[in-house]
Image (tube, rainbow, N blue to C red; front, side):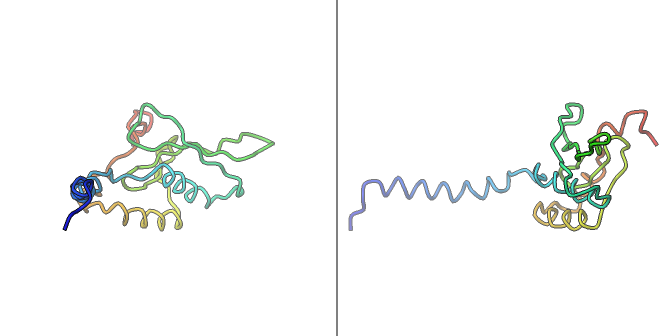
Length: 145
């Protein structure tokens, strides 16, 4: 039986791919995505629902590259549109008020965090290590407890 000339190359490529894919999946970072972080902030502040027009946008915080940072705004013709600044731990989903360093939560955010943590599959040891992290801005003297 004869095989097409490209068969041997194709079978080698498939073999190498079958070895590489599991390795790449293992190497994938176990972090919350920007979209998941945005949803966690939204679910956290929704408890105080100033309206369904809340906008949660990524915010740049070069001083704290480990956490995901967001700004929440809403249309407020009579005053400030700014609702707050938030920092999300990308391993645990913990949401902090980035201005007061208060750990925030809501039932819907807790449920979402649970689903995300199932996907991330961190070991108990790794989760405990990451849970201890706080936004760097909370370590400043003005926020010490």
